[in-house]
Each structure stands twice: as C-alpha cells, then as structure tokens.
Length: 133
Ligand SMILES: [Zn+2]
Image 1: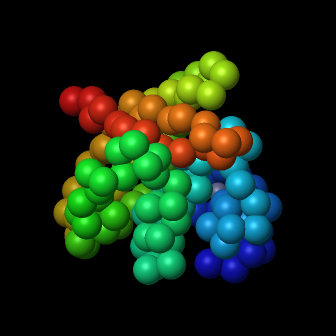
Image 2: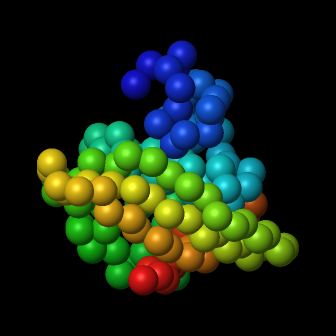
C-alpha cells in the first residue's frame, strides 16, 4: 500500500496520514480509535513486519497469552472495519468494533469484539478482547 492510497482501515484518509506512521513506528496512536484502526490495518495488510506491530501494541500483562493464531489467520481476507463505540477514561479505553472478513473465497463473516485498552507510560496498548456473538 502506498502512502498516497486511501488507508485500508477505511478512515477515508490517505495511508501516509493515517495508519502508516504507526505501523512504521514514526508516531504513536494518541487515541484508542487510532490504535484499533492501525491494528486492523496490521491484520489487513498481513505482512510480517506488521505482525510485530500487533505484538508491540499488546499489553505486557496479557501478551504472554498471545497465540500465533491471534497474529495471523490463514486465508483470512479482511474487508472492512466499523467502529461502533469508543470510550476513553483516563488510562483505560474500550472500543466496540465489527471487522468484516472472508476465509479464502467464502462468504463474508463478521468479527464483533469489545476490546479493552490500557495506556502505559503514555502509550495505548491492547489489553484484551471479548468476542460478541
Ligand atoms: Zn488507517
């Protein structure tokens, strides 16, 4: 994806002014929404360097539970992200989102999750997620 392309997270902004600076570590997300968007972009782009971004933005308190399957879902094609609700209170954040994907050429499926975030020394990190039915 080029810097001038529309960002894969669906924000409507160009990649170079949206998730790219986070994915290449030249900037850090200031809001939980930016973190969710950039983590979605990391999944959607799926390159190895972006998997490291997922690990680096995982809170150390829960990072030991990361499974490889959390970082790469074989054959998943991520299609769109919809942020439903965001709350940020002090160093705690919560984001409800739906991510639409398909496995290989299968039908569209929806991953509906409520994620919790914690700001650690000024940096937003993914703490855990609860998958909704
Ligand atoms: Zn983006």
